Image 1: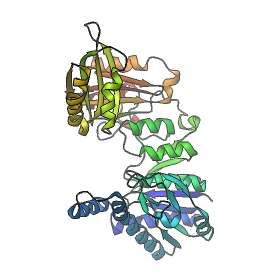
Image 2 (image 1 turned 180 degrees about the vertical axis):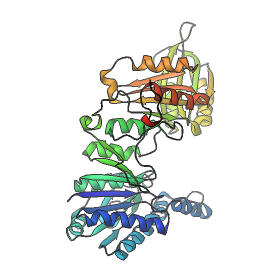
Image 3 (image 1 turned 90 degrees about the vertical axis):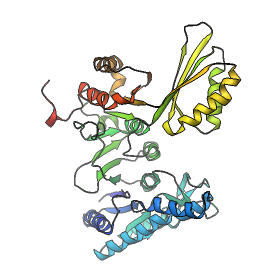
Image 4 (image 1 turned 120 degrees about the vertical axis):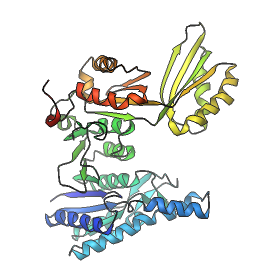
Length: 415
């Protein structure tokens, strides 16, 4: 007998029929003798509907009242799922985040979990009940309902698994695992049997949308085995583990290719090459709560001056341009701002890079053979990222996928 925490997202519980299907799946595990905690999101589209209602009442509602409003979406789902389990003869009890004892700080709309009180939850499990918990929410020290921000239900599931020392946290979604890259871009992408937490963190931060970064961070911190599975078809999914030996039994050099075309590049040209220039450029950007990704600083051909290039999210592009023009350039006493919002970032990820030289050289050679120019480069111990023109994104992903041996065997020509 094992203890599983199973999380089902909005598409998995998007209709009465799908909720009934989830109940059947949960019953199957319960019939095998396992203890089950189920974490659910709001039905797909429900949170957006609630946010739209709020905007019709007040264009700038207080964060506390927004949390009070959007948390009701999960309350609907937990009660319906508990009812569906009862209909199948399965003992089940539903709880909101506050009722189950998920204690958070008071940062409304982006709260952080501080602790989870598990006594009542364990008592229900020991009685043979399935415990159904509302994801995405908790309660602060003053008794206010809080929400955990984007991907909060994943975080709830992993946090409960950590608190209960569960055998596995299973994330059910509309895909059947983690793939070497997005199958919509590369039809030769294959599902990974396993991947390390470290690699999954990189993949999530670089554009892979299978799991939210906070949930993966939580899993790594508390050593929670994560498995991504499909709600709609059977299969082993992908195991995400801190054990590199388990995750890399085949010793692949590269585990996956992530990409992001939601970035823009800005360059401050011909700024004085003196200490403190970087902070003078990025300080006002940070003050505006704009996150900077890649950074490159070069010495320009004319002595004493430098070019400073960095990337931001595409929706921050125009605001960042204005800040540079109106605040940074005057403070520097000169310079020019150049921008490009038609770029994409492509990244190779794999713990195998630690013990293999020449990965960057091979990557650059493959891109050069396809006529793809590299605009920026960033590296870490298990990642190499390049910025290229957005129009070459799909060509770059497919070419690199083949070059690094990631293609599915059933669609790969003999090499």
